[in-house]
Amino acid sequence: MHNGTTLTQFIIEEQRHIAGATGDFTSLLNDVVTACKVISHLVNHGALVGVLGSADTENVQGETQKKLDVLSNEVFIKSNEWAGHLAAMASEEMDEIYPIPTNYPRGKYLLTFDPLDGSSNIDVNVSVGTIFSILRCPGGGQEATERDFLQAGTQQVAAGYALYGPSTMMVLTTGNGVNGFTLDQNIGEFILTHPNMQVPADTREFAVNASNMRFWEPPVKRYVDECLAGKDGPRGDDFNMRWIASMVAEVHRILTRGGVFMYPMDSKMKAKGQGGKLRLLYEANPMSFIVEQAGGGSITGTERIMDLQPESLHQRVPVILGSKNEVDRILSYHQE
Ligand code: AHM
Ligand code: MG
Image (cartoon, rainbow, N blue to C red):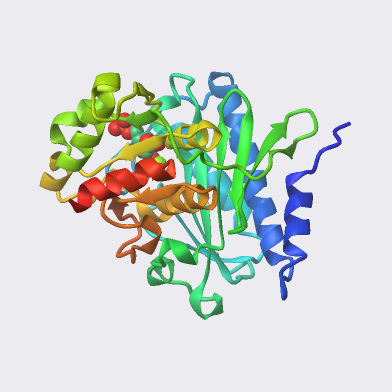
């Protein structure tokens, strides 16, 4: 028997202090957690349950979908459409928003998600994750439109991710700090194992896909050059580098021991008219909310990500997040 606090217990106790809380939100979070447990099971069993490989379809961004991308998306919809807490959902894997079908009651929240982030890692058995964000539906719900989803990150009610790594974890914020839970596979419950997570303000570790170096803008090039120069360079210290190509795993490392993660703007994306690599509504905003709530920073280079007014559902943005002092330094390089 475990003696720890379960995620459900934690949320119920947290919501008790909120005037006017009806239990809707707690119940919605429970459904999201259930979806992540199902995805965790699929990811864990991989080839044994025939879920690896490509699905022969493309998503709205023209990327080939993996079988697990499509399955995870279905799991999220099935787990979250029935209970009456949501007006609509939006996902990386769906071109349009998904209004709750009329045979179910509709509710006051909106849910955005990337059901399985880091798809390139699925077939090679490296960590992947789920990212989600919860918003209030303007006008109280019922008939939600795409425009209702276009809210700045500062409006998020909650955000979280599930990391399917050596252990499955759920990391969550409702705007009151960040807490991490580990899935106890024996009892099927997430248990509070990482209370009040904090991103150390200083770091000597950065994460970036260095194969894009020749396309970077000068401030990012300068930052990385200075890190690479080591003890003899302007930073006077040796830096370490990591690149997992799974944003969830990357952010989790930063929440655990600090660091900077960058998927910056570059000339190749600019030439294609692309605003960045990562998607604002279901990748950049939820991760920014979590990182800021843990004391870190999150910017595009020139602006705070959570202040951006979204213009479209699948909008992409540059992302630089992590240890506060390093993020501030990179911001200052962009302002010079
Ligand atoms: P995805 O949503 O298609 O999986 O793409 C997002 C992922 C992030 O998790 C990761 O940081 C990045 O793409 C890796 O990109 P690259 O393959 O260019 O290194
Ligand atoms: Mg993704």
